[in-house]
View 1 (cartoon, helix red, strand yellow):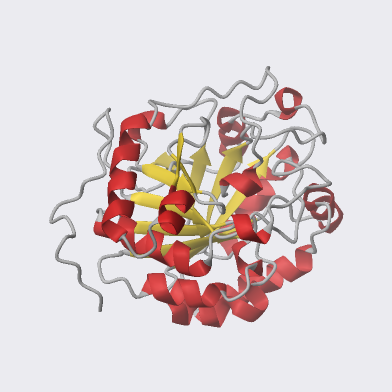
View 2: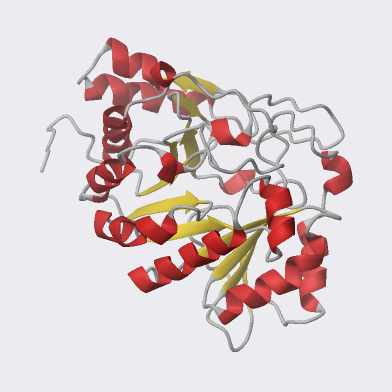
Length: 338
C-alpha cells in the first residue's frame, strides 16, 4: 500500500470559521441518463471529454483528501454509474486504508446490473434518488426515467447486501408533495432511510418557477405527523440531514433544508466537480482549479495537498440561496455534483 513520509500526521483541512472538513463529494461525470426537472434543463450541453478529470486523476484526488483527514468520500454525478470503468475508481478508493466510508449517490437506473460489483468494490452505502412512486409522474419528473427499472435496482442492492439504503426525494409543490406519506411508507416497509430535500436553486431549468414549487421541510414534516410520530434524534451520517425516528421502525426520516433550516454552521463538506473545480460551498462560486494542478504537476501529490489546504481559506460562511431571484449560481446540479 502506498505510504508517503511527507503526509501530514494530523488532519489539516480547517476553514476560517473553525469547521473541520472530513467529507468530500467527487463528481465523476456531468452526464446522466435521466433529465430531472430540478437538476438540469431539457436540452443540456455536456462538457467535452478533455475537460473531464480522468479516473486516474480522480483517484489521485481521493488519495490526497484522505491523507488530509477526509474520512468519507461520496461519488456523485450526473449519474456516476454511466461513467465507463467507474468500478476501477471505486476499487481504488475503496482500498484506501484511512477512508472510513466510500458511499455513492445514484438514480438507481444501473443498480440492477452493478449492485454486486459495487459491494465488492468497497462501497459501504448507497443513496438512491426516488421522487415518485407513480410511473407516469416519475417519468414526468425525470423526463425519461423508468420507475420499474429503479425499483428493480433497489431490490438488487438489497440482495447484494447493502443494508442501509437511503432514498432521496426532492419535493415540489403540486408535482409530488402529495406523495410525502407514500414515500415514507415505502421506505419504512423496505427498511430504508429517506431524506426529503428542498429544491436547491442551481442553474436555469425552465420547467417550473422554483418559488412557486417550493415545499418546505416544515410542511413535509406536518404532512408526515398526520400519520406518524416523529421523534428527533441526534444521529447523523456526516451530511446535512436532520433525522427523526418513528417508533416501531428501524428506518430514519431525514430533512435536508437549505432554505428553511440553514445547515451551513456545521458544514464539514467540499465538492469536486467533474471538471476538477474544488467547490467550497454548494451555493457559492468560491472554487479552486485542481485540474490545473493535476495536469501541470502530474504525480506531485504534495503540491496537490497544499492547493487543497490553501483552498480552505476561501470557504465561505454559507450560501445565499434566494428562491425569489434569478439563479446566482448558473451551473446546474449535474455539473455541480449531486
